[in-house]
Length: 488
Image (tube, rainbow, N blue to C red; front, side, top):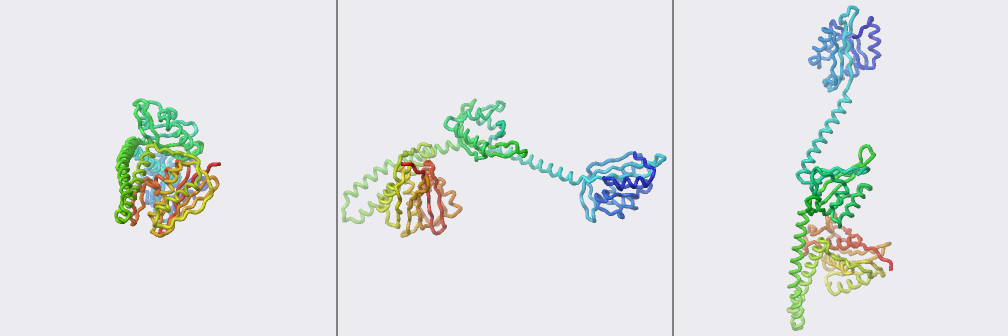
């Protein structure tokens, strides 16, 4: 209770209070004193409140707390409401606010309620911030639930690694993929132990690099399950996220079972390999018969000789295509062998130039002079790459146009380029151009299955080189590759 003897003392306290206060007469509920803090929260001027019946001054909210005000006067007991949502008319406009207020009775000398003090505090900023946080947390919770459903539907396993302590937290699905029971503990070391020998060091290095340096983590490897001893192929993708505290980072990611995909690839590669081998045998015989016919053909029989020459060319094209399929099959099975040796690149290019002069009758092919440079590489396969780039340039450029081949020394590498005046490559196709079986959409009909550039890229990658294309669409392209030099 508040007992004050003099109105002057009361007015002094109210006007200097750090919180909003309005004093009402208990007899008629008219406002007698109001301070600036109260006016600020109410969004009204003093003449809109002083002398006015409280329920008239705040007509928009009278129905909510009028009875509480009457009870304070009747029973001389205070009433408090915390963070109440109200719609006040503030500065002439309706506005939603959150306020805490107290109706506190003031007694006269005889102990009767003569006045009521209304203490008012604006909680709007705090409440709005809390509601915003709660809404964000709710959205996050819903997103996490949706993610869990998606991960469950996709059969993904998930993990979390603390960058400092290396604490390893996984879900039951990840444990299952490594052959563990849901209630068994699984550490990073134990997980690495289930990875097959040929991939263990590779995965361990990639993991440490991603955690320590924030590098990419997208690895494919095989595991043998601890309890079920099953061979599974897994793909793991993860990234490093800094904790808001800045004290550590969280490395999180998913693991997916790609065993069936790997089996399908193996079946496909086996099929390609078998079919290619089966096709090569009759083609070899057919080529031999054609060569015999060429030897026995009458030199004056122009039609027969022309037909035989065209047949041999088609056999050669078919053989090249089959060899490409075989190489793809071997490459993806990890069975392609690189017979690396040190050789003079200029001599290889000279040989290709001589072969091209014999075979080409449609384009102007120019080989620029180059100095003697030695590389450590598979001579036949590098020759295959160069021939493939020249063949592509001929396919995708008009008859009679010029193709230029150059090879220059750059620091510790050599850079070979094949420049044509053909149709060019659109920007949207350049990144995928070296993908397996990718072919550029074009109105120009060109034979082939789109594996030549893929094979070339894989061969160059196996030599720690780079391959790329620069193109002016509609005007031509330049294909480049680099190889490291060797000291002689």
